[in-house]
Amino acid sequence: MPNKTPITVATGDGIGPEIMAATMRILEAAGAQLAPEFIDIGEQVYLAGNSAGIAPEAWASLRRTKVFLKAPITTPQGGGYKSLNVTVRKTLGLYANVRPCVAYAPFVTTHFPTMDLVVIRENEEDLYAGIEHRQTDEEFQCLKLITRPGCEKIVRYAFEYALAHGRKKVTCMTKDNIMKMSDGLFHKVFDEIKVEYPGIASDHMIIDIGSARLATHPEQFDVIVTLNLYGDIISDIAADLTGSVGLGGSANIGEHVAMFEAIHGSAPDIAGQDMANPSGLLLGAVMMLVHIRQAEVAARIHNAWLRTIEDGVHTADLHSAHSASHVGCAAFADAVIARLGQQPQTFGVVAYADAPPAAVTAKPLYTRAKPAAKKLVGVDVFVHEAQGNADYLAGTLTALAPMQFKLQMITNRGVKVWPGGFPETFCTDHWRCRFLAADSQRELHHGDLVELMQALMQRNVDFIKTENLCTFDGERGFALGQGQ
Ligand code: NAD
Image (cartoon, rainbow, N blue to C red; front, side, top):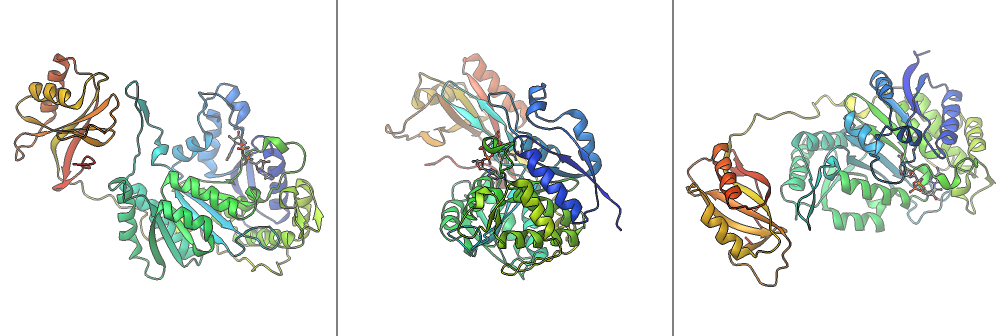
């Protein structure tokens, strides 16, 4: 008998306690060797004054066990409550969100009976950094942060996952025709890493046509790797195409800790009625067992679960002509337990190997490159100006700029409005004013920027923020203005 693996368990809110009880019973009956530590998260913890929905002592358990089986929680309505999921993912470095989306036709009604794909979503970066500011009366900003280590980790994870799970193709989705630097980096890293996996086919799609194709032909996809926001959206679409949100499990994988859960929420509309389908959480728990090297138990549960679905033992969300008996959450768990040791007759039999995908890689998940030679060549100054127009602002800024600077352009919402702007361009009160070194051979220094700021201050220009313009090993580290 293997030693029991300590795991942290949160029973959550709404249907959480019901589906967790059902899942834990199945895990125990299947012979999973687990030593659960229970923690409180969610609604009550929020309402007790912890704005993140998790008590300080719960972190100690998570950091000790490094494995988290989590039921869904209810986020209270109203402002001030931070998303617990985002907090846990980012605090514990859970960089990969893995969501298998599989059709179980004909037993679960779906338009796409052969779909079987996995969305691997970057989980820590992108617009989810949560760095937002109101800068003027009219303009609000959310910063999109993409890093090279972040891209390398998720792209390599996707290829390693494909290798470990016998998947044939990895599709990268970005919007790099518009966001050439941030999404462009993700695509570039994908192109760099894919050549290390010649046995796995790969392609890239722009996210708009990619998601359209996913919604109409999901059977054409195998593994999809994408940035955080796109992955959030397309994984919900893909999960829904399989037939029920109650069926999806997901893993959040980090270098140190991993979290497993159902993809759905706490379903308060059916809570406490023994109606919920525990399958999503159970399939999340199956991924957990593979992760903690109890692959044999994982396969036993997964096969018994498939057999249960085939036998038409269905919870309310799966009712169809293929349902032989309609059961509640607890009776569904009993049915799975009764089938432990049996194999599916129609679906393929599942087999798992005892190795978590992230650990099978002999290659480092990312390598920090030598810092590039960085040269400061200018600065973008963002200005709040409600009354003025671009020509007037340009006149003011040109007159005040210290001699080491020249005003190169002004944009409004990214579109060049000076020099040579169009009267048709709608302008808000938020102007980006680009100053470059007057002598392009001369490197600028922070002292030059301070001098520029002082000149702006003396003329009462309401500057909101600045962005340094640099080259890295001679390569431009900033985008041109639209129309420039
Ligand atoms: P939801 O996923 O809870 O419910 C959507 C619909 O699906 C409901 O009709 C529900 O009855 C049904 N459903 C969901 N899970 C089911 C299951 N296992 N079996 C049968 N039917 C199921 O989404 P929602 O109603 O938008 O959100 C409810 C709460 O859950 C909110 O407070 C939200 O913030 C939270 N939430 C939590 C998580 C999480 O903890 N991971 C994820 C999403 C939403």
